[in-house]
Structure formats: C-alpha cells, structure tokens
Length: 567
Ligand SMILES: [Cu+2]
Image 1 (tube, helix red, strand yellow):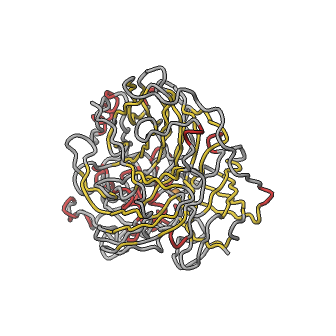
Image 2 (cartoon, helix red, strand yellow):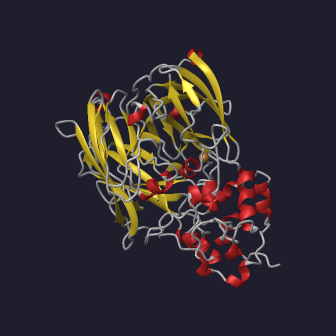
Image 3 (cartoon, protein in one colour):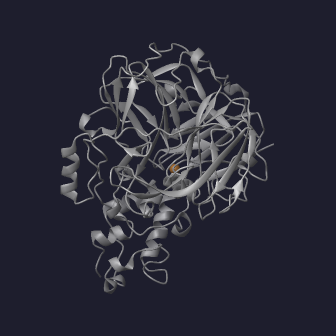
C-alpha cells in the first residue's frame, strides 16, 4: 500500500503535523523571504512596508432618543494595496465603528441582519441581563431586526461586540462582523488621561488573516479546529503594517485582540514601556509598566505610551507559540511587525505627564466566596485524533468520509482507494496526548487540508465535562455572589471568558498574576492552572443562559463552552 505523500497529507488536513510553519511578518525581510524559498510557501507580505495611514474607526453614539442603529452586512475589504477579500462589517465593509455609551444611560438598538444567514451580536464585557446579551439564544434571522435595550451600569471600560452564533462564531467573527465599545463615565480629563478620540486616544483592533484576496477567507481544516485558526497576515484596524501619526505627548492605546486564536505579545522594538491603566473590567489602581504585554483573543488592555521624546517607534509582537506563556525577549529579528508610530509636532500635545494613580477597583475578598468549582479545558485530543483517523481509514462510505467540501479535482482518484494513514512521529505524539506548541503557528492557504465546519468535522471539545449543549445548564450561581473558579488547561493555553460576570485573577500556577491583570476582567489566558474570584453581576435567565467558554473561537464552536444561570 502507498502511504500519503506530503501534499496528500496536507489535503487531509494533516499537513500541519509535519509542515514547517511560516514566520509571520518579520521585521527582517530577508529572513521571511528565506523561509519562503526554503519551504516553497506563500510569501509573507513585505516586511518593510510602505506604510498606509492607520485607518481609525468612526465614533458612533446613540441619537437624541437613545437609539443606536447597527447594520450587519457582507462586503469586501482591501487589507493592503491591491487586495480585495470577502469580509463582513457593521455599518461598513469590515469591522465596525467605536460605539460609545455613557454609564448610567439607557440605550436602545435596532440591529439589522443584512447577511443571508442567522447571526447574533454579543456585547462582550457589558454587564446586562442574559436575554439582551446576544449569545447563541438571541438569534437574529436573515433580514430580521433585533431590538434589545438595556441600562449601562458599570465602570468606564473598553469592550466590544461580535457574533456568537451557535457553531458559526469563528467564521462570522473572523469575517469582521464586530466593533469596539467604549463605556464612558466622562471622567478621563479629570483623571489626567488622554481622551481626544483618534488623536491621542487610539482604538486598535488586531486580527490575523490567512487570506487577503478572494472569497475563500475562512476555510479551517482539521488542524485549525484543533489548534485554532491562525493566519500569517497581521492586521491593525484592517490594514497591514499601518503607520499612525501621534502627538509629541502621552498617548493612550486601546488594544483589542479580535483574532480567533492568536495571542499577541506586544512589544515596542525600541524597548519603550507600555503603562497599562485598564483591562477588560475597567481601571487599575495604578499604572503597571510592562515591556511585553500578552493579550489573548477577546481580551482588552488600555496602555499609555510616552512619545514626548519625538522618536518614532515600531509596535511589534513576539512570536506566539500557543502555549499561553509570555515569551522572553531574544533575537530582535523574530519580532513580528504590527504597525509604526510616527510623531508630529503639528498635533496638539495634551497630556505630558504619566498619571501616578487611577482608581482602586471594587474590592475582591476571596473569603466571601460562596462556592468553589473546577473546570478543565478538554481538547479531547485522543478522541478527536482517533475519530479523524477512523474517517481516513475509510470507515465511511468514501475515503473522504464526512470530511467536508474537499476539492476532489486536486487528487488522483486512482490513489484514493489506496490511502493509508501517515504515521509521522508528530502524529504519534499527538495521539499520545502531547502537542508541539510550534504547531500552533500560522499556516498559509496552500498548506490547507479540506475545509471543515465545526458541525461537519465531528470534533468535540468541552469545558464543563461535556461538549456544549444549548439545552443544558451547567452552573447555577447566586446573583450578586462570588465564587472561586479553578481552571486548568493541559495541552495549550486557552483564553477563558465569562458573560455577565467579572473576575479577579487570584493566582496563576500558584503565583500572583502580573500587575497588569490586577483589576476586574472578563477574559484571561489560562496556561496551566488559574484561580479566579468570579462575581456574578448580571441576571442569567433560564430562557437565555449566560455562556462561559474558551475564546479560541474554533474551540468554542466545537463545544468548549458551558452555560450558567443566576438564581
Ligand atoms: Cu481553547
């Protein structure tokens, strides 16, 4: 019997097991080009970008009657000169506006679904009742308009909104049907913080993409569903390697990781510090200086950066191995370029001094915990690999089994009956439950196996012992109470997110969390063990349970999600 050659293995979605991963946008063009030549992969975009101006989303506020109109639609977007890719957006072609809502206000929405499929819109970070939360129970049918309304009653914070459709979240969010959300209390001037929208207060959304041309933008294969979908193009506000012009002063960056699974490890290539002032749930007690800031999918940070010396700076990420661990600074050549900041003395310099203190976050006393619960991020690695192996061995009606919409024209049909499972050592390691973190890296489109969906793949993962079930409530918690949640990840880092609740990170692997994670949060990367103090702030109704889940969107879609209600 013939074994699969490498190309065929790739078509079966197993190419990533042995493929050398493509370095993302390296600062050093020669090194990226060298990798291309060596491994015959799609070239990464130029690492010495000409530098388009940073696109900045528009500001959207409720009208005089408190109404916000949003339209979710498909479009096309150009990520760099000459590119045109299928996309989705809110009130536009890709991504959406920055929606600013005032604390203590009542807001009403008219959200039109102009895409030809079911979707939802979840308010990630808002503490609102579960029947307004936009989770998988809040279906918006094609052509329909959803009209939620709620009170804003929470600390000033930087949040976002995105689809949360049952088994379709990853694709819909990746296409760009999302936007940023700012809960404002109007107090930033008094706090001494930069607050001039788009000038010294920049909203930045980071998404990685595999395809920036054509329609086949999101087509995950088996490996993508297992590790999370990653692309080699790193975009900021929908542009590759843009350039922002900032005043010669302190500048505030609001950082949102809207990628499906990539973690970023933000770092200024000249070593200048970021001063974290807020995370998901609002301000920290005081700024936390950090030179490598790790941010997981769904997570947000606000940082202050000092540009008063007038020097331009490159904003980069250290490479992400998927483990969830913050890498150490090593070879500068490995820094992945995200964007550049240039300083102009033509812009009004407003804030010249770093604040020394902000607000003490609301108290978190673990002694007040009513209950302790434990959850394990279970990738069901052995089960999923065995399932895929069975399909490949021809247990189904065809060698393809139900592996999805594979392009049969790419294959020699005479070989199809003779296929045999490849047995590279990597495969055996994975079957044994081990995972090489290097395999989490981005792959390019020509490395892809047959595309799958969460529903057709047969892959299942879980966080609440069993894969997600919309009709099962996993947790009942007392509204207003606090509980200690012990989370554990085994194979890779998983970003935990909970709706309608905030938490404090009590410990990570027995150590205190870094200073920049000292405030209230709703999303945190779990690498090993984490202990959280969860505060159930919003009402979780039985008709529309709240979600808690992994924010690797592929994992969420294949079942790494549970439901809770409040009692
Ligand atoms: Cu996960």
